[in-house]
Image (cartoon, rainbow, N blue to C red; front, side):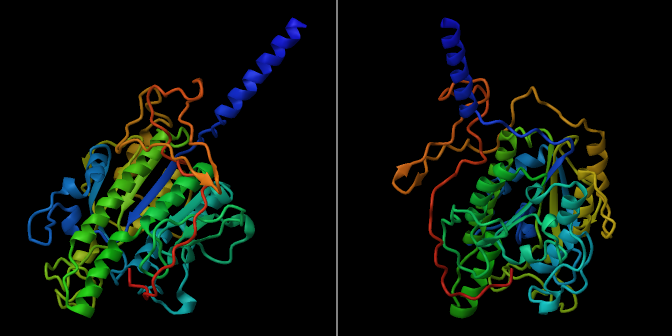
Length: 437
């Protein structure tokens, strides 16, 4: 009888431990890649030449503290150029996704028959060749058109992957309603905060091997400056644009911390950061917010030089803090990621960036597992969510092998999955027409 009671007690203890610490997914055999695209970052800002509304210098460390820390850990590529002749968003994303110039996409408003990708994209090639399924690839974006150009149609059901852009996604309908916390000014967009919340909710559930994240608030704030200037003749100011860049830099740090907190991604993931276009380099308040064929240079046949020059940053196994010497194009990013993932991308015309793929190929599959992860922002605190009137439990910070409620010895609470379960209504956006990103 005593032996029986002892076995029952042992079984109950094991059952409780299993419930307290959910099993972690096995890390993949190959690498993961996370691509973060921050919309519309002007050369003056990422080049350390920004000034505020009073003309005083704004330090690079004030705008991009996280980006600077990541530059110390990875490859900084300051000589990257857009590959499209328009200098606006949709052609840039079309080229980045397809790894080639998409000749029929020359503006943000192409004809309906051309408002799509005309070539296979990196996301669908990764999903197909690595046999990743719906959850293995994810696109989470603030701007709605990115989901429309993310895959060459028609897609069979087994070729679909998770796409969430603006307030819509292609995920199967569930009882849990979508979460949106901030109202959005422009049609066809959601705020970057809500995009980040979507990352927090979906990535821990899906663990995509390839994750593409788009943040668009900075570009929208610049366009809002131009709109106020045009309609009212008032100076809205560059302050709001700078604040959006500070916000997105912080969110970049939170994304990094999330990767470091998750054993699926830590030490086995490349983070690549870039922007879709720059802006007019003119300091005139009526012009700096623009991009494309800008007024300042009086050139109508090609985008202004400030719009053409962009940056990229790559952090991951085998990469160390240095500045790349080579010059590259947007179309080179997707072939580089394909190489890191170990897939072919025959329809792409861009070339893998040698300064990334060569040291990556020499790096072991897993590095530094015994070292504590490096975090770039303050550890996020667990959030107690409510469903109806019943409080939901806070996300546990317990690590495998610890008692529930005990503090982990090294890592903070997981940066992914901190928000779960609450219900919220979608904010009603003002009836403002969409701006050209």
